[in-house]
Image (cartoon, rainbow, N blue to C red; front, top):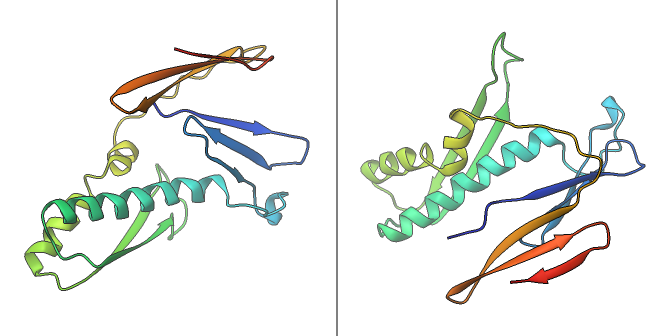
Length: 166
């Protein structure tokens, strides 16, 4: 079973530039556009949400097409947040999917259904609860990684950065 996704976000001295790291060892960053005071050095948080949905859509379509032996040659996903302006309530995401390959109408319909069932689509259209609290210091985090047939739990105790592997 995969580890519970974990992302750490750090805002340094430069206004609006944040760096991210995750439990899989990846790093990336975000920033705000110059018109809102950012440096436009990386994509903005709302675009990260759109990118997550687009990536999940394309990956899920590829996985299902391979499993069902559907001749999907490629996928392009375009997403827009509130293209007609901010609605009175909620938000609108418009997602356009280009399915490439010699696909029948039935296969296209199947893949559209799959796109609407990708995990990020379910997350964004379902009930989301965000539990927020403040702490005086981040004291530790735990990550579980699958290695071979077993799991390895890594505990990182801050601020010294002591690491234990179990």
